[in-house]
Length: 166
Image (cartoon, rainbow, N blue to C red; front, side):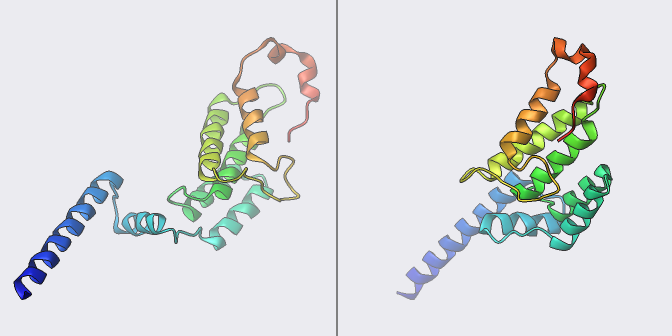
């Protein structure tokens, strides 16, 4: 009877160890901190560093968009928070928007970030209640980013200079 329990326990331990190895190869963490973050994501206990998020929000409001993005990426290293990804996308939009021209690279990066935010908030539409923003949903932001990346004859319209940034 005891040998049967030992065999079952050994088999369960072997399967758990094999699952751990497969998971490590699938996630490919470079540091132990990344391993811990990935484990938090898998367990559903992942949270954004709120202090760094608030610091990035202050930078964003002072229009220091690159510094804000760096801080948000430190606050959300696993890119697992929809709200943080929304703000990152919004910062790409704000920096890439211009009265005369749009920075295509920044708008494309913003489009990737907003798609990530939409994927993370797949259960319900992502809405951010921030009175300082002119767009509050990921769908609005995505439409603006897509419009900025498209080339059309309206790009040479001189009245485009009068358009306001959202």
